[in-house]
Image 1: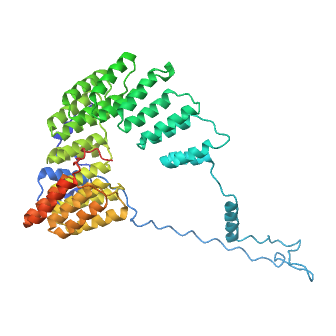
Image 2: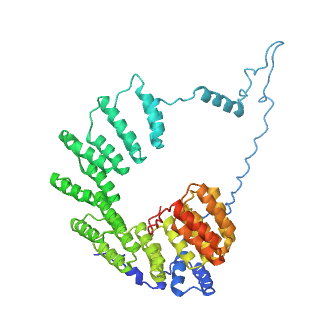
Image 3: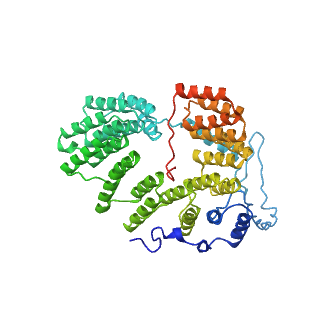
Length: 521
């Protein structure tokens, strides 16, 4: 059963008075703000929890004054005997006499620095081929890594090693270069290096990541024909299972599960979570229930499993099912994490359940859970949907004060919130900030700007943003055409609606992908 410190969802029924650990000045100030606004008491609890989140000291605070050290006592005057006596003959360089107490003149620091720089330049370090290859692999530059490996193979001291090929195959697989991985594997066989289970697993992982399940299964079957040392293990089966679950090929998933049971290969929790995530993405709730019941009986559930199941229920709008599964996971001894609370906050905020959202925020603060970028994104989006641009801006300022790095979702939430609140000058500031930070421009970002322009009635700027979106190589989705169509309909511009519909039919559409609640980086 759940521990008494966090008994399942009991914190959802907590009263506002339980969060009295915040400072009195902050509470009184924010209470005055809430009394002068149009927010309800349930929304006020949410903002009070936000206000009571402790701030980190900023770099703009005035520095502390340093006390000046007391002056050193002056040395007594030297006697005439202690004064340096310098003498030399005609044609000799000046020098100190034997009786002189002075030390030779020190070399200036500036000259020493120049000498050190010259020495460093003279001893310029040139990386070797192996170091150059390691650097390219670390930077995930697969093209540079292949060029460096080609140079390494031309060296007279080159010897094929399994570790080098494993790193290269893994890099090519994560970069989506399955064909290059297969060609590298064939070159390895020509060099006479015997394959191993690790090399085969790296190769089939590359094919599975690329979505080529047929080749991944062919490599898996080839492993079975080799000696027992090359037989597929849990990692090899997991790689193919993840690819099959992501592609919704559940026939392959069931076949591989039967094969694993016949060979006595145990499934890892990561493998089960991957399969569970595939069932959840495909909306196969019965399979999710069956798979999850088996995991609960085997005691192989963790916080990742809980996040997958809660996210599935939240995306479907089943709040009661989400709360029931939360209690069941807590009863099984699974401890929630920050990502878990982000899923709950996003689900409650999307449906305007301010009481429960405020209770989760207060529970996170009392339990010592740090608010992440995803937490602030959920709060900013919730305040934006409520039309509270002023409070949303306060949350944004606190996020920056705590050193949280904003992402594209943060900027989209700010633009949408300012657009709903009618603060269009703030929209311009956010767009300029995105340009300065160099954040990646996505379809959702352009949709948010287009929606703000449509609310402001600036259709000329809306069209310019739409053209810039296409020049950036991004494909408009259903939300783009829907927002622009409504803006043209309000102005009675039937010709623009016709042109937009023709572009929608002939230009193709990019399907709209909603963000999973609370699962952003």
